Length: 470
Image (cartoon, rainbow, N blue to C red):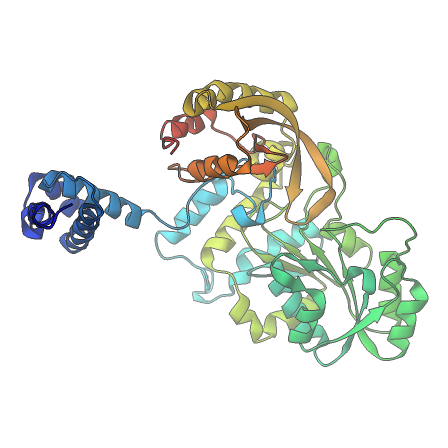
């Protein structure tokens, strides 16, 4: 563009005040505020100036500037943390928030979040209370423990338990259980932070009772078992049964702690799923303290649960670190509501989203896929091939890592051989939907697994907002 034409085009852009006083700007000022609107208008004008300098054509009217400003304001107002459609095939997806809460838990959160609550106030005595009082009785009743307490996740539960019961002492753990979970959380590192001395017992694949006895005879002051929930060692293996570990710990007058990791409060086999050890199993086998998560197989909010013998749990609660790791009122309200659902285990799969998705009939998933298929074909057009295929869903979050659940998915692939680049571009377009859609790329296809999709109507409506292919 020649200099005169360039200057003329730039001069044709409206002034900021002219845009702000336009009819198109009035609803934006009412919704977002005049200050935010002013900044958005200035940014929109800067973008238009840049486009003109690059040789582009723009419509220099206040209405167009206001429309560009409206897009900026909408993008800025959109929360960073948003609901997404989890079509990855992993039910408890750590990166996607793990367990979804049932309506009862959501209502409980709203009730305490919208006003004052008796979080640390005893309504009977009119004096200061203990926030654990709202949850301890439920946890003790379900698990059979004498006492229980709550912290913000299971890593914190392990850290606090170790620091309380084993600080400055040796803690005996089988080498085959020195796990690492997501985010580089490693048992040896946590032990060091807790002030404990790790005593590795046995070998990676085989650990015997005599190995633990030797460690205890040589001064170890705690026995710890760590559930290897995110991997399996098979073949020439040996492990010490939990009752024998409990007996050894008892003979040496030291605590026996069992970290279950994901944890579940029901025997999953009753619902046709593989068995996963429960806190009840661990305590019955002789553990003095068990730790487990609230937001995995249990199906509640993020929390770490510590349950066991009263004297040990009381010591843990008195640790000054407990205050730094405690849960807020919304977590306690949500977990309490979820625990109430466990009073009726026959209806639990209907009422708890995690269990409902894990036990969902294959025919139902197939029906959802069939409903979505034509809508997705219409949204994507002839450039894509889409087919319903057999799939395997994972439980996720380190639970039962070698076991999958049969599912159904839509497999999306380019009609032309354009490679992974176009699939990645499509994945990005789906992530930019009003409610982002998260699938997984596998074997040159984008797979959308419908095990966790509840509202197919809302999903189809969401597809109508898919931006055109570039």
